[in-house]
Image (cartoon, rainbow, N blue to C red; front, top):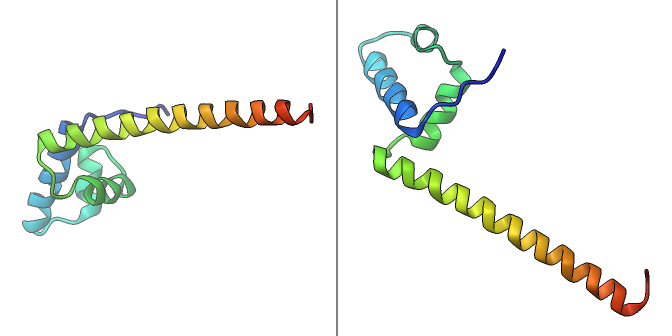
Amino acid sequence: MSRKRYTAEQILGMVREAEVRLSQGEKIGLICKSLGISEQSYYRWRKEYGGLKSDQAKRLKDLEKENARLRKAVSDLTLDKMILNEALSGNY
């Protein structure tokens, strides 16, 4: 079974809908089944996107992408530095 990728707006919509239906007394299992998601996904999304607005969620995703890109750049530079230091010391 392939994974579905939801946008931040779709996730926020599902979380909000689930919150409304929960306040009306519906069980979380039935809500998740009707939305086509697992309970685990719902709880993870609620923790991550709980109080965010649409534009804030989009900004969060953009920042996460930027952080991943910067971490990769730092790790590449660190590896290059280690290789150069080892070559300089003559341990190759």
